Image 1 (tube, rainbow, N blue to C red):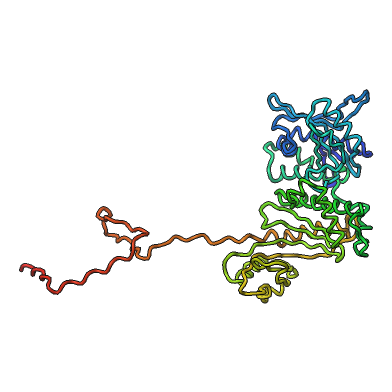
Image 2 (image 1 turned 90 degrees about the vertical axis):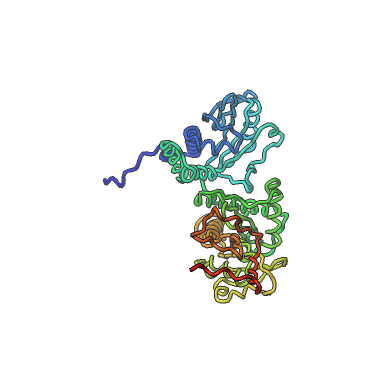
Length: 465
């Protein structure tokens, strides 16, 4: 046997996992141990939840008594800084297991009875909107208690961001965090990626194609919620590759009222057969919008770019074409005029390269912005793999960002140039600066012309011989 076939010893092995219970216990222990060992990673996860920047201590399977019955949450986290202590219970699910409302209600009662601060849930469920919890609980229990949810994908993203981009000061701690990443990326860990559009996907897709879909059908809301969850997963996935924060492009109302966002998406799906969302990428020229057209079987990605504020219309179009020099020729370009409504002049990139005037409907009108869009065939399967909707959308987002969004830069006006006075005369090299009584001013006008000599002026005396 050669050395290449030997299995390296791992700090957190995936071998020996038998059943969901063992998988859940090992994932919980590994995560909490690394949170307490790698200071930067623990802070990255806990500070957004309200924990102070202090020492992190973690425990697993801490027993409590509630109404003469024993309850054993999966874990407990305590952060101490000075006289302040922040404590949270932790409930973990792996694989396809979902959080149970009754169990969470019991743990919330324990949190309140013990005077703890929060309950943290971890599972593969991804809420449609950040901050939303995937399980409905009694809101009366949340008056003085915080309830947070961390999808495994978000935890993996935070670990990768901390190790690969933000950095870990101690090399040994960085290696420990790398072992957690390696473990969570393994299929046996139970930290699954987004892999299912739900049971309602096929009937809703077929109803859209047949024109029999109804907005009040509960299955439409379910598909709309899964679409937003897929977009959020796409944000986390892209953020891991870019090393920067990528979040859903949502309005303040969407964040404050997640149910209203889901209902609006369901109405859009029922009336037009499309669902639309966006990704906000730090440093990008604009949000990357994604439209899933179930009637046409297409996924459209687009980004809007403000046009330059100076130059002729053709100059502004050429400014965009120079940036898309290596982009696919099948891109669709659209130009919008200032103070105009409705659609603008549009054509494919390959045609606009030959004739930029195709995007200029009226040379007398000023161009306001451009839209760059790319369409791909949408998969139909509810799961992952070839021909699936999930993979077709994720690939469309990655390709469009790589080929278009990352090469586009916003227009910047040229910096102002220093003004040089028209009458400026450089100083003579043999001039004594002490003899100069005046300096050039921006308010100086042209020097007056010298007066002509008078005809009756006396002649200068002749030199002596």
